[in-house]
Image (cartoon, rainbow, N blue to C red; front, side):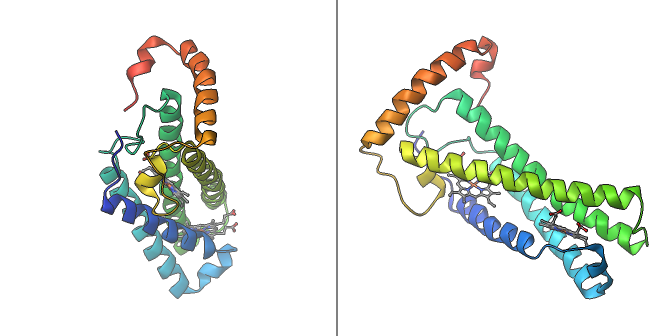
Length: 198
Ligand code: HEM
Ligand code: HEM
């Protein structure tokens, strides 16, 4: 408890935020743009590098505990929710380049109309939209945790560092309120699930 993410974990996390923002920023408007063969090649290389980084990151990060920076026990339900959001983010981040590559492959075979292309573009857009939602939830949860002064924020974010030695009144109040609510929720969970989270 109370540790910090490794330098590599932090580097990959923040480098990836830039890569993701760039990928979203440079998004294509329509299929016709792929007639530019230079752009098509660039998209394919970008999507392949993006996918490789996501996979390497996933396997590297899977050895670490969720909330390893917490300086006090974190409610189990928070761990379940955070793990679910993290996994769903990875799911979207794999789906985006994979469907992008599928679009490229279909385009090169001249299959620009039809169910396959419509499906690939539909899933591509869905993965992008879901990733926006999940990232918004993730960032809000991180800010909430920062307000509670739990140590999780500081284990990953280099700014607005927490002071582990003292809790603000606000942090105390949120922690007490949340503790009361969560005690009731956790009492409803099946006992065997209570020791499943890392
Ligand atoms: C593209 C945007 C982002 C993505 C895709 C993302 C994804 C993730 C993922 C998957 C994790 C789990 C650890 C891992 O596997 O690396 C994580 C951890 C974390 N992220 Fe982000 N993140 C993003 C942006 C942010 C931002 C903007 C903040 C803060 C303002 C933030 C704060 C944190 C914190 C505090 C953790 C540590 C949680 C823990 O220790 O379990 N993230 N992020
Ligand atoms: C990691 C890589 C990629 C990211 C992050 C990404 C991101 C996006 C996003 C956010 C959109 C807008 C979706 C919407 O709002 O409906 C989009 C659209 C599109 N992307 Fe990608 N993309 C990637 C790779 C690719 C690749 C490799 C191709 C094909 C070579 C591609 C082809 C397209 C096309 C054709 C559209 C327009 C779809 C339409 O007609 O509505 N993308 N992309």
